[in-house]
Each structure stands twice: as C-alpha cells, then as structure tokens.
Length: 112
Image (tube, rainbow, N blue to C red):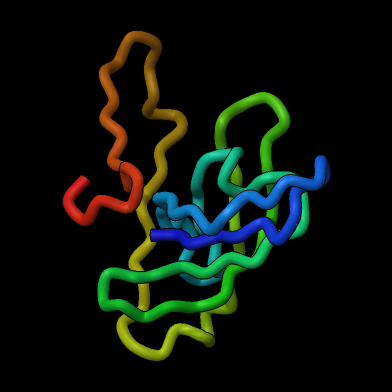
C-alpha cells in the first residue's frame, strides 16, 4: 500500500492523505509501479507500507503524461525486515483482447 500527501496542490487546494496500491517491479533498484494520479505532478510526501507493516519513504520517479501509470523509487537499503520480491512484468506477453485482472486498494479497504 502507498500513502501519499500533497501538502498543497498547484491550484492551492489541500489534497488530503489518500492511500493507493502499488507493486514493487524492481526490488534491486527500489522501483514501485502505481497509477499516474497517485504519483501526481506537484510536491508530495509519500511512504510505502509493505505487508509486514514496515513503512519506508518513497519519492516520485516518473508519471506518464498519456497512460495511467507512474513510478516511485525507494532506497532498497532502507528495508530492514523482509526484502520485497519484484512482480515480474512481461510486456511482450500482452496481447490485444487478452483478459487482465488488476488488484488494488479500494479506498484503503484491507481485503480489496
């Protein structure tokens, strides 16, 4: 789970402290994949919460301007307990019309 806070959006509104889902896609480099709107475009304070309840700081790395994905980065040395395992991505295996399933964190629900 990712927790992020945008202290103040560019338009001046406070954005709150929402939660989102993310997946470690490169544990060696500390890269987490999530949605574009989660990474956002303004200043942000964010943390990753791993299944073992360890929480670490993450920083925005990239937010795609067209597609709905973004990346955060964390320092792999900052993970003290269980090291995360990377979710294996296979972009060459994706085919048009193939059914996919996404798992998320619907409004912070524990079993979503």
